[in-house]
Length: 181
Image 1 (cartoon, rainbow, N blue to C red):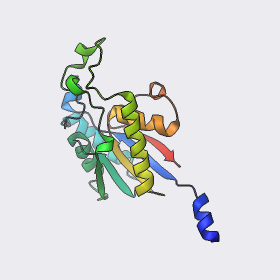
Image 2: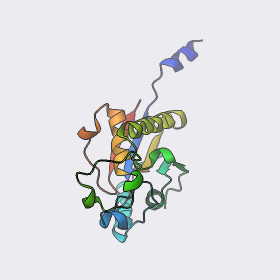
Image 3: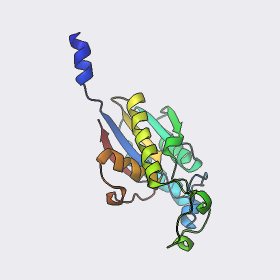
C-alpha cells in the first residue's frame, strides 16, 4: 500500500526538446504550407545537419515527429546516427490553413480568415492533446520532437501557461527545451 501511495504522488517529468523543421522550398518562396508535405531546401538540410551536431551530446530516449514530410525528413537527419524509434503523430501537424493553403503569405495580409482555417483554440486543444500523449507514452524520458512553427508555439503556450502571442517565434531547425510535469 505504501509504494502505491508513493507512486500516486510521484510527479511525471518529461524533458522535451521541441524542434522546428528545417527550411523548406515553400518557406523560401513565402508559400503558406499548412498541412501539405513540404520539401526541405538544401539550406534546410544543412540546418538540420548543424542541429544534429549541436544535439550530439544529449541523450534522447525517443524521437517524435509530425507525420508531414518536412518534419520526417528533418527527423531522419537528426536520427541518422542515433537510430531512435520514430513515432509519427498528426497531433504535431502545422495549423490547417484551409483554403489559404498554398497561397503566397504576403498576399494574405489584412484578409479575414475563412471559416475553414483551424482556429487558435483548436490548435491549442490539439497541442494539449500532444502534451497528454507525451505523458501517457514517454513518462520520465527525454524526448526529441520535430514539429512546425505555430504548433510548436502552441505547445509552449500550453506547457508554460502563456498566451501564444507571448511565445517567441522559432526559426527553422531551432529548438526549445521544456520540462513537462
